[in-house]
Length: 362
Image (tube, rainbow, N blue to C red):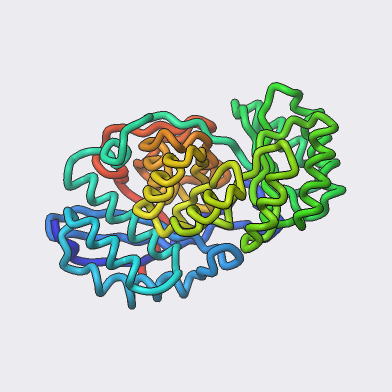
């Protein structure tokens, strides 16, 4: 099964509600989709999210990286030689984690088809069902409480609350939400780098003192501030998770060996795909650091790949793979089956995609 062609296209999907964080606001999911064809007629799909404030990748830069740098080094290669393919992808250009992730996904999709097995079974086969949280965007406290109640009514047992714009208002947001949902629902918060280390410790200690029972806090300080992360981790009881601070396996090793956080959030858009994410999983397992499998604003293409990784590894214990549930429509036929908080993986070869609508190829 040799790689014959690589194409890029665009997918656009409206969101049910605007997605708001301390870093950005998104109203429509607009991403790049990669389609890889082989000499056997097999097709593999991958997706790259547009997130300039996080990865630095734009629509134009992603397409350019794939077609001008990655495509030439993998054309003609045999899919079974996955290690060499991934090495070529990684060394094709520096950075550009999202385009690398999209091609990596499409290769793993084909790899599963080659061996007639779902990817999650090839990578470990730990579980075939996943329960995701759902994100509550930054808004006024009452609106966030209403969104939280709506999520619980749909069956979600864990909500992820976006904070980080103003710590005083964040406190009010969390108090309002906790009062609305009661104590039986897990609340995790994501500051998206929005606080200083001292602000983070101050606000999180207040949350602890007020009994808000926060499951974890994600990326409370700037991504580069590893000392600040460690300062927060050392001075609060609430578990701290790194997100934007960890892109590569090297980043993960630095975070882990410095004991800067309690948990790591793995996202394929940051790692450059499944191949490097597996290295982070192995490292985390060695050191006993549990991981979350997270996402950016991706369609079910990217989230199916993420779900297969989540299904493969036991060190991944938390799941934030809700983006398809935030979309107003789903143009993807096949792939992971989303039933609100429940995500199911079947026995289809690769990622199980059958057809993808709304694609506009270059």
